[in-house]
Length: 448
Ligand code: ACO
Image (cartoon, rainbow, N blue to C red; front, side, top):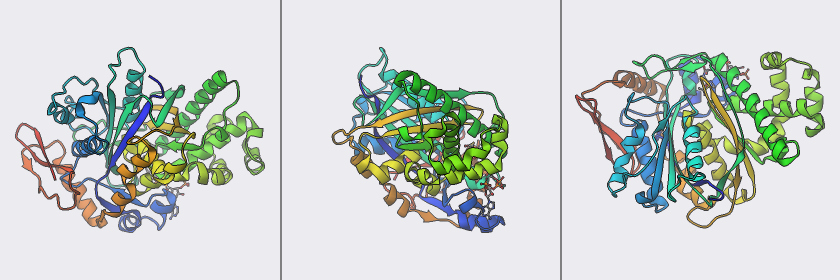
């Protein structure tokens, strides 16, 4: 199989959201902390009728329908999620009725979990399957689905919710450059979910930022090393057209891109422009650890990378800024933003992605964009995802109503024997929603 990669995408996020500006005021945070400080505009959240299963049902059925894919053509289905609804039964099995109905139960794959990385693990598995000798000629399907909610406090504005479905196969418009991959895996307690009675993580915010940036450094080094070995020349930011990052909040994305520029500067100062050389010069003698602690370096490298950020990163930031951190879906929501903004000018471009999951696991990998025919053309993917239509038709909730919703969800987490309001009035036609959890914890969904 040649040019294996992403053939088609669909994105779903709840139509309910809060404005970060309103949340700032409600939380008593200083004005601008969430919007400028974190760089976020809005945050989507599930109400009591939605969850990671309903969102993934919606994304998968919509993808199959809009690209006219027969469920029998799917040979592998993998889900990435860190939202635990059941400690044994995979989210994948909740999606199986879509395929069983058409007589297809011959579908490999289960769920992958490690914080925000599970979607990437699922994606790499599917790509590897299609490139392997066990591939049976059918498509792979990857689903990333998460509802990111935090306890009251500084992490709460960095929540979000979404599901993304991606069809995987050969001759793809978005293909993997599989040789160019760098990973960094290690043991850390930066963000984890040890409390099985709560949906909220235990999070050391500052540590998680440092872990993220250190993993980025390490992945970039391996990535560059492999590139250089295979291509016989150094890799620098100029060798890719776009850089896409796991996006817990936009400020971290700005810092990440700046960090890559600093890496280029250290490795080969002639690969960065004169302004960057001048701004970064004073930091060339810092040790690795010092460089992660230096606020001055952070500011200087952000300034030095601003121009490149605007062309190589900014077009990827729309959905993460509007919807929030969607955990496993976050990186792919950023990618969806790029397709939405630039679909007509991406042919031939190289896109480098960085996936991070606390705990910790991270991979940097490279994709190449090709022109292919309908229905898998980028312009059709953009039309199907309809990002602006979905953003525009949302319903704003006040922070008070948002907090009330989270309180209700706290009580519902792990509970049995309840029916929901079954109120689907805010959902668009075709959306799945939760109706009931019975006395045996069995969950029931309906489609609007
Ligand atoms: N106007 C403008 N900027 C402001 C203002 C203001 N009024 N107030 C603060 N800021 C800036 C700060 O200077 C800081 O920016 P800087 O880092 O560029 O200096 C930024 O806003 C955030 O302020 P902090 O005081 O650092 O925020 P706090 O520590 O309260 O919380 C944090 C931020 C740690 C990210 C928290 O939201 C969190 O724990 N989130 C969850 C963890 C997370 O997402 N980690 C990322 C990787 S792991 C993952 O994906 C889950």
